[in-house]
Length: 354
Image (cartoon, rainbow, N blue to C red; front, side, top):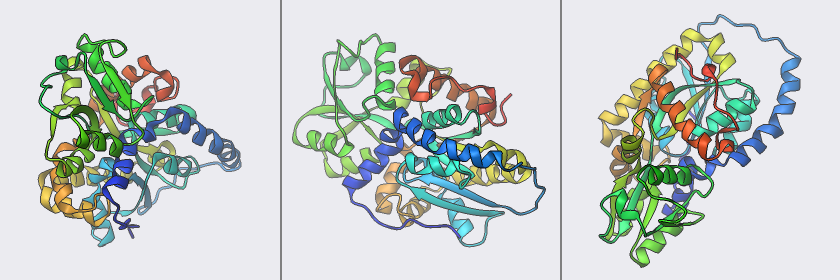
């Protein structure tokens, strides 16, 4: 039975949750601390047992998702599982942050997790390759917004002040990379003021003209509360313009390597079911938005319906996944190696890729 998270949250609290999904939860230091604190006890337990591949027709998939865009694509599968209509036993539980999920993955209490891309790389490095990424589920969810009418391109940002969240996290690295690739020095050509929460940024823009980087679906929530706020640029599109061989990646699906290896046929079926759920969400926005609201991911279906098309929910796997994700991680590596765990993941990180 799906463990539903039905508590409704205010727009302010939701901002924190969604910012965490794309930004705050990506802190490399906090990931390392969580992993390190759990790995020692997990290693001693694993040494006491020898795992043997089990051939079984039916297994339970224990899945952990974050309360944000990275889990939106799974809502149809969640509904089918809850109603007993799924092809296998899928148990999904949602959490506010990646830090809550990491110990569960390390200790073997969760088989599959939906995590920020750089957190997945951190987990791979800290556990010495015990996890694999099987699919990209969310591309970039960052947007440049403005209360005003002065920005129409990246070039217009020169000499401006930009408000953002995510200092020392992927929003900072993403913005810096796009600026640099457009000939703008983030250190001298612009002023970036980092705030702790997206709600703080939105409040600033409601009181004065200004420019900011915000994640979806908070862009939609903030725009509904401030009619003067306009979306100027999609940073995913701007990334693609300067880096066609990679993509701006927000979320991925991570699987315990041993679990996938021991249950190959069942895991492949899960991936088919997961892709079908993502296809449904992208093709049936109104119905999907209601499910997103039912599971407490967004407080109201109308907000979810407006936000869903802007959340870049996708299913990308195998070689295409490897190309896009490795290119993205390489950019982060060059800006701050610790943001991805200190080293680029090896080829075995990419499930199904050659």
